[in-house]
Length: 272
Image (tube, rainbow, N blue to C red; front, side):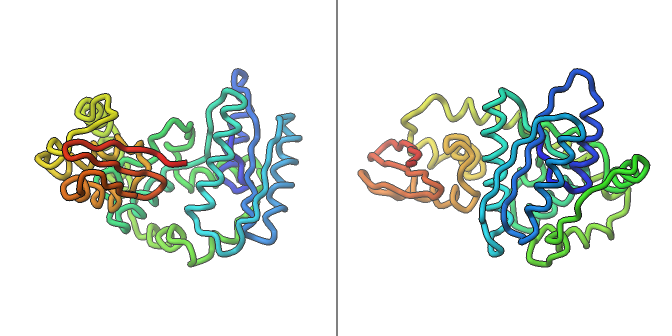
């Protein structure tokens, strides 16, 4: 499981290591954004020793100017590589307040309906039913120690700025948002199934099919074809290219995705 050393992951580790049928590997990614981040790695290593669990870590020098998205990307690459090595699943300590913050971030960025269907991947998140207050109470009741990440106080990161505003939400507001999230996740499964049927097997796709399809539907089908690697603005530009590009043209959509056009069809290629 991913352990940063913060209160959330310390609580989750304490809970999971008590389960008799769960085999754990403590994984820590040191992004190198803070000068003191190596202290977190040493703290987590001592936790793993305390619970007699294997410990794996990796440090990268992303630097103080690294954005939140880059740090997250590199962290999950590390975690996924470990999961593949151990034939295991990634477990993280995301809780219900994290889900609400993620919805708020997506909304602020103008994300479509998927912005509400957050934290639905194959990652195991046992604390999603708990809020931050309950996690803090558990940590105090069990005399747990943790490290506070100084970047959590920085206004540099959008999540931190929104987190302070989330305090104005009532418990009832939070329950309603979480209920909407669960409903949207259920709808997402149905939508993804329909989209997969519409997309077909490929590798060639009809340009006319996308020209006459409702744009919102076309965007969802393109998202599936591009394996979720394109943002909504990138998908919208790709849809415009499908309608207007000349035969023989190549459209670079971003993130290594290329659209190759004939007069009637197009293919999508991932350039590594």
